[in-house]
Image (tube, rainbow, N blue to C red; front, side, top):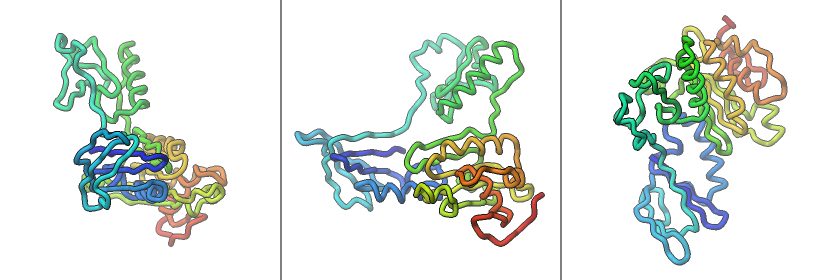
Length: 287
């Protein structure tokens, strides 16, 4: 699944073949991005496919098909097609080793990033998803320590992901989408940035911070943030998930005011019905 970005002058249209942008990302986070894109883009066409695309003297002629298409034939100056990536594990001579490549093209590795060939290690995109630079860097550290003889393993509970759009979207750990797919019971605590003094001061209340919590224990299983600078804020969520923090741990950690970082604290307070800036009936006490 991919998207097409087509530009005509300063006007950009986004075309997505599925029913929503960023498939797999929680819909409440994506909805904030979609709302802003609809204001700034020439068009946002969902459930739309590209039938043909060919060069003409005055640009690129594109024909679309889909229920939301109002103008099937349009001409653009430039077109960017984003259809994802695939690992480049072939043409490396690995067939002359014991290295194994799975059906998706990824090199099979163990917890130390060691391949089936004991002297060869693999990290990064070629070693499996998520295909992220910071995941690769951490894998590299694990591999080097393993080669040095240390007892280490690549066992993250939360690998942060950031979509560098405006507003940014960031998440880590368990998501609502994953929980639903797995039939897992969760509780969600959301703090809208419209109640954030800091977000209000720079006119960006279009954001939300949410916690995914384990109902019986209030353990933080995941964090999702949509808003300006979300990528800078998600690191605290990663720490919370990795440390098996409870909602009370986050709620009782004093955050500076007024900042966007305190939306994490306030989301935890929402869970208890104790948020300073967003009224919710009190439900339970700190454990």
